[in-house]
Amino acid sequence: ASTDASVNALKPNAKGLAVLLDKANISADECLYIGDRIERDGECAKRLNIQYLNVDPNDHKYFIRLTNQLNGA
Image 1 (cartoon, rainbow, N blue to C red):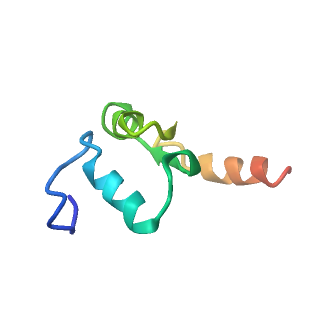
Image 2: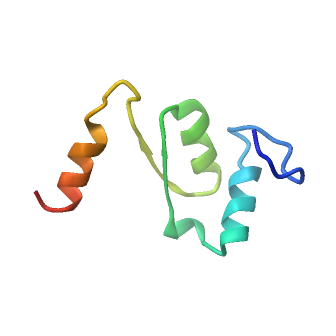
C-alpha cells in the first residue's frame, strides 16, 4: 500500500509507480522494475512500458549472481 494519499491504489494498478516516477523526475525508459510476482509487479511495469525483471524470492543467491554478472565476474 502506498503512503501517498493521492495514490489510493494497489498493484497492478500503475498509479503509484507513475506518481513515484513523476516525483523522482524519471522517465519509464530509465527504469528497471524488479519484482517477484509477474501478475502484479510485471503487469504494473507493463502498463507504464517499464522493463521488468522477475526474481524468485526463494533463490537467495540470485542477487549475488546478478551482481557478479554485472561486475563482469
